[in-house]
Every structure is written in structure tokens, then in C-alpha cells.
Image (tube, rainbow over all chains, first blue to last red; front, side, top):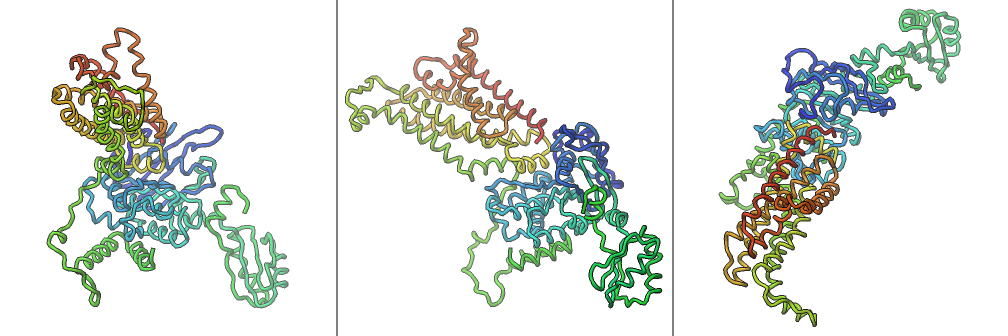
Length: 316
Length: 305
């Protein structure tokens, strides 16, 4: 990984500690003026985790990753790597390669720049893992954008890094390619720490165990994905019935802990409680007292997208 | 990508690196053991063909060699230096016949044209077309940050700015020097053939001083890369600097130090100049080259993408 321009507060290669976060930033700031940039970001990426960095367009995801990878210089703050700096690999959102090199040569070059003693098998393995074995001898200049993105991943994987920084790695891929890359990233959990920026929240929820939410250059949430989703789970339940549910709606409307009750369609009732706790305690009691023929009861699906919209203040 | 490769990828993705490596090894073994039963066997391979091709590891230096060879930049150098250079003395020697064939009545070439004029024809061609080609090749190689994705690829993998600048400049300079040296050798042979023996030491000194001038020109491209990003801008800036470089001659004390005279040293040495007259410009050229290179390394290292 590049050591120029010098990372703020990193005099030379840092000593890698075996425990603690694989990556930590303290008050990382880069101000482009007019409110753009990143401001006082303190990331803590647990070792072995897949960390998703999400945020709306212009939130500062790419800037933050550029500061971490040393491609841009911070105005203030520090970046501390918990892994040796030569064990950090970066894959940009739009990777580019010398068009006159074959895919295998690109991957070999990427590996040898980091590790001059790279074994040839590593090149084959990286190409195999990214599905490029059959295109190994094709010139990089003839690749589609999706294949180029895979090649970027292969170039990052070849030296078997301890920390991978992936900026929008699935942005140019078709659904099948996206699924494959997400499988690949998920398969790294525990062995390689991955920092993964994406605007596709379903991807982040699928593969990341930790998430950081950026808005207007500031980190407004950081923690486990499951916790974020649970925190922002809405106290709403869907009840499926044999009958049309009109009677049940009236029963729920009479309860003081119910905020809103509505019939979504005949046979499907949505109940919104004041709190999750009140809903969980009372909803089955009301159903028990009613004469309704209940098919199923369940909380309305909560996901990262709804949590993201909730904490970033955007309307659904 | 075929269905087979997709399923292989998924399997490898699930099982991780070790499984992927095993799959690759098995595939390689399968290939080594020849065709599967039922498949046609190809012609017997000779011992020579069976020997695995030894490929040199791909590092920054070999990458730059490939940049010159695979992008056909060597072909431009071949045309600009040896081919055009070889044509120069021949044109001078047979100028009267050429003018006659072209029907240029009234144009009388001077009768006393000799080896210096033959050399002048080469120096003129290499000093214009050759110099343009050399500047273009260097500008294309040294535009380190022109393409952001490519810049990120190199900048996140190399440890120091030296790695980004020096191999690119050195291999490019070596290619230009080889082209110029080969061309000078051809011109020397032509001069001997067309006009008789010429002093060997003067030819060698001329080649040396001309090479130093070309290196300085390439150094100016490196210097431009310290501040500019686009290849066209690098080329233009270096060209402007070269055009303006004789200006210090207007000030008499600088006249003996000004390096642009190195470009025509080959001709003047065949006339009546002595090699000692070019030592001071040569020193300046070397210093300018080293300064520009150092500036490029320093600035490219400090610059953001």
C-alpha cells in the first residue's frame, strides 16, 4: 500500500498489533469547502469483520476510503492500521489497468508490487476466485466494465491481504456477478477484514456484520448491522385472517396501546403499537379474546434500508 | 463466462482460497495428463515444445519494457531515428540526381557537400521528428496520474514515488538512446561509404553529446510531469522549454554553458569544433536532467490523486 502522500500521524510503517481493530481512524477530516468532505470520522473496524460503509450520494464514502488508503491527504486526524500496511489492498470503484497487459499479467503485477516473491499459483487462484480463469490471457483493454471490476478484485486478492478496502465493488456487475462477488466477500469473513462501501443497502445487509452510516461527511452510526436493524424495527405487526378482519380492526382500535390499525386488504390487518414491548406483550392477548380465525402473525419486515432512512432522516 | 465457470466460481467462493487453489491445481494436473479418454490426442510434442516456457517475473522495470514493445512505440523510434536518419546522408549525396528526377530546374545544390552535410541531414531529422517522437513517448509514460483508476492501482501498491517515475523515465530514455546510437552507427557507415573515412572519435563524441541532449529533453518531460497530468500538456510544456532553452545565449557569459548546442555537436565536430567546447553544455544538460528527475520524484510523491 502506498505510503505517499504520508498518512496523517503515521510516521513510517506502523507496528501491527495482533489484537484490536484492523483499522481505526480518529477525527479524520478533509474539508473541501461548502460543507463537502468528511469531518471528524472515527471508524473502528473489528478484525476479521466485513464492514459496510453506507451513505447517500455525496456523503463522503469515496473520500473517506481515499484518505484511509493514502490517495488523499487528511486536513486533520489519524489513521491507525492494526495490520501491516503492505497487507492492505485497495480496489477502487472504477479500476483501470494497462490495456496491453493480459488479465493474468495485471494480477501478477499487482501481486509482485506488494510481494516480490509471489508464487504463480496465487495468480491462478485469484483469477479462479473471481471467475476470470478463462479470460486470463485476454488483454485487459478488451474487458467489459463488469470484468474489469472482477479484475480489480483479483488484483486486490492476489497478495492475500489482511485488510481489503473495496469501494463500490458491485456497482458495475449484473445480478449474477453481484451475487458471486458478494459470496466472495462473505467468504472472507474471519480471515480477511473487509471495508466495503456500497449504496446498495441490500448488499450491505447481506454480507456485512458491521456497518457505518455516513451523512454529509459525518459518521452518524457505527455498529453491528443486526443491532441497527433491531433498533429501528418499527412496532408494527401484520395479521393474516380467514375472514375480512373488520371486526378485529375494531377490537384493536379500542386498545389504548395501539397507535393505528388498518386493513391492508381483506384478510390482512396491520397493527401499529406505541412501542415494540407493548405490542409484543398485548397483541396475542387481543387475538385470543377475539373470535378471529388467525392464519399468521408476524412483525412487519424491518431491514437496513428502513433503518438507514430512519437515521438519515429521509422519508420512505 | 460459461455456466461451468460460474459454478466453479461459486464453489470456490464458498469454500475459500484453499479449495480454489486445489481446484486450480486439479485443473492444471488434468491438462498435464493430456486429453480425457475418448478425446482425440494431438500430434506428439517434441522435447523442445514440451519444455515449459520460462517467463520472467513481471515487475515495474519489465512493465516499462513491455510498454515500449507492446504499444509499438519502438516502431516509432525505429522510423524516427534509424530509418529517417539513414535516408539523410543518401539524400545529401544524391541531391543533384533527386532534383533532376523531380525536374527542379534552376536549383543548383552546392558542389562541396561532404560528410558534415550528411551528418547535418541526420541531425536535422533526429532533432525534429526524432525529438518529437521521444517527447511523445516519454510524456505518455510519465503521465502517472492521468487516469485516476490506473494511478490508484500503482499508488496503492508502490512504496515510494521513485518507483512511479524512475523506471518509466529510464526505460523510455534507454529506448531513445538505443535508437539514436543505432541511427548514428548507420549514418557513420553511410558517411564512410559515400565520402570516405571520417574520424571515429568525432562520431562517438557527437553521438554522446546528442544523447545527452535527448536525455535532457526527456528530463524536461519528467519535470513537466511534476506539475501537469495530461500527456499532451507534458509534451507541450517540454517542447516549449526546449524551444526557449537557447535564450540564455543572449547573455554572453551563459553562451558557453547553454545546452541546446549539444544537439548539433555531431555536425560541428566533423567541421572544426573540438569536443572540449561541448563539455560545459554537457555538464549543464546532465544537471538539468538530474534536477528535473528529482523534482518529478519529489512532486509526484507529494501530489494527491
